[in-house]
Length: 251
Image (cartoon, rainbow, N blue to C red; front, side):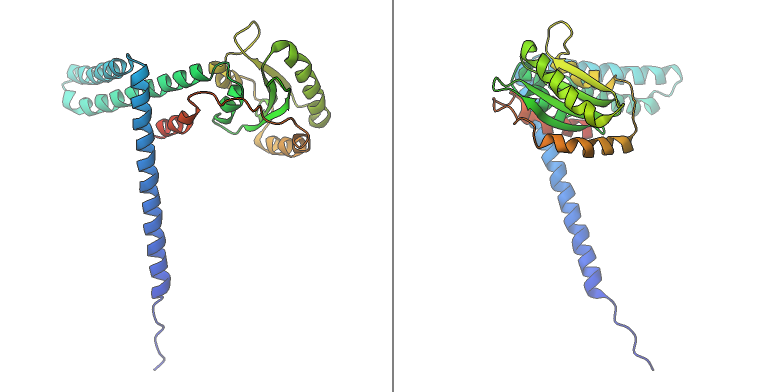
């Protein structure tokens, strides 16, 4: 009789070990996110005295609404868990928003703050920081997205004007009819505050598709090699909370 093939024990063992390792990695990542959120909560609570009352208030109100709606239909014990869930989500949302506001407030006016904010954009944005700059820490950052090409400038307005014009001319030679927008970060007239920069970019019209974004990035890569270095000023205070914000959004 022909011999039966031996079971592939080695392969099965490797699969189990890989699955176990992946599970351990997920647990470690989850533990790290919880630690980041706890650290952020501790820091924010120390600086923001109304944080905890706001979170508790939102939780109680939304839980009460869920219970009250159920009470009208004699289903209060059914809707109560839903109210508790909504209350918890509302409290987390309040926490995330106030952490973000604190971080942006600390970063305001610091060299490199706009680049930091751009690198935290959500979505398919392609960010190249400091494609042009001056020794006074003025900088122009290039962002490619659905609107087209956006040049974001930070620094002294009178020095940024010629810097923006020069970079816009360089970019226009390569992108053809793709729209080019320019944004100056600041609190003056015609400027966009740092805290509202992500929202401002998100409101720009969508002019190109994802395939065009990849093509534009490839074309503009040749300009990056000749771009100015990133400003060497201090990082915005609170930037170490960047991963905390991401962790809050994941929860």
